[in-house]
Image (tube, rainbow, N blue to C red; front, side):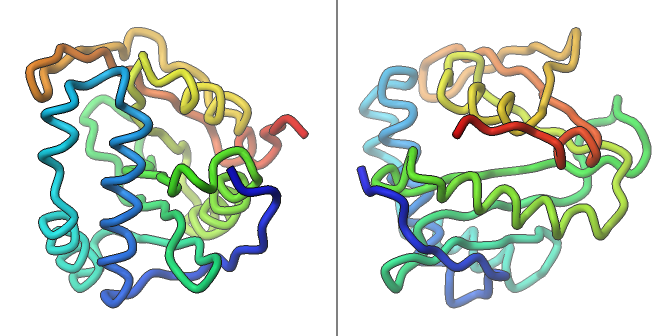
Length: 184
């Protein structure tokens, strides 16, 4: 773990796809090692993720910011229109927020989220939502500290890599999230 480190948060561009892909795969392998089967996590491909992120970044449908530290991408946050059909109008969905595990618990995630939220608020959304695995206690703590609350009745389950996973939608208004109180 790294003590508080300086990072720069900026808009992502297609050249960041490789760095985003590395963070994405590494974060999954560490965050979900006790949730998903190791064979599934080992099968994750940085090369495939790089292609997916290049496509997303080139077409601009997904908004993405990256945290850059030590001269490389160490985290990213992606969002766009909410994909759920049972939500309020003008709702934004956080699709992903991942950090390289070496940068966990040193303020980088908080800094990245606050920068992303500043950008998201400029679109004047009514609500902001995201889906999180119910077994991902670390992420649940982070998002609750940021001001998100469980959307009652939203819990669902799905199968991934031979494991049945629970998932819950968290929501908040931009004002609630702006006031989110992270632990010091």
